Image 1 (cartoon, helix red, strand yellow):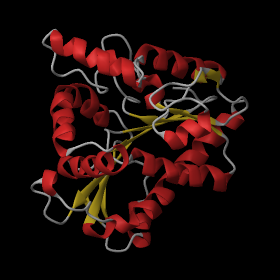
Image 2 (cartoon, rainbow, N blue to C red; image 1 turned 90 degrees about the horizontal axis):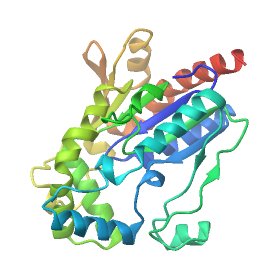
Image 3 (cartoon, one colour; image 1 turned 180 degrees about the vertical axis):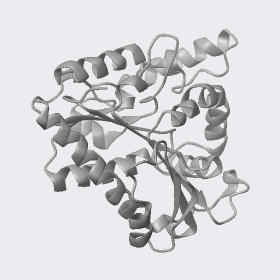
Length: 291
């Protein structure tokens, strides 16, 4: 952790909705005039799309049926840790981009399924912002959680997460239900062993809970809407959180525990603005005073 060069981490599983949450952070950064360098977790995958297929086939041939992007060995987490360490000490670092589709290929000038070249992070920024799978992961070789000054988990209940993944992978990536189900099964050991432990290390978790039937996520025709959901917001340390103010601003919300508030799903963006803005401003203010 670093006062002078702070790092914000947003972590969550594939299909959890971390990209949507990132948009809220971008709004706050623009409104408050905060300069943020951004890195994506996908940039620290070990393999491009073709190489990942080969690595999967090799793992299968060795009897490993659980190798996936969730696996620490499928990522260069040591390198991510080095970027976190360097930024926290100097405000510098490097990143690249993983090109997901034709639209990004046109933007970055690299074919889909490949990485761009490594390039330095922008200089003279207020903070580093990470969004991806492993931002608070701890493995035998690296402790990424130690670097995040503010860590946020995006954690829909698992049936909702699977519904969101099903619809995204079908509509945007052309995958079949069977292929997506196989991916979910393959990822499960690392989901349990690597992904979910992060949410005990985060400062705030946002967990969306549908209030409609999601008993069989593999046949759901639509993703439950925000108005068909509630969101549980859990604070690791509730000291300094003005819960009466939040409840007054977020109508139909209530506290379920001393460190948790439950809000209507449609109020999530407002809740994030109310909760995150003072946290980020305080962190950036401390950084500027330490210069």
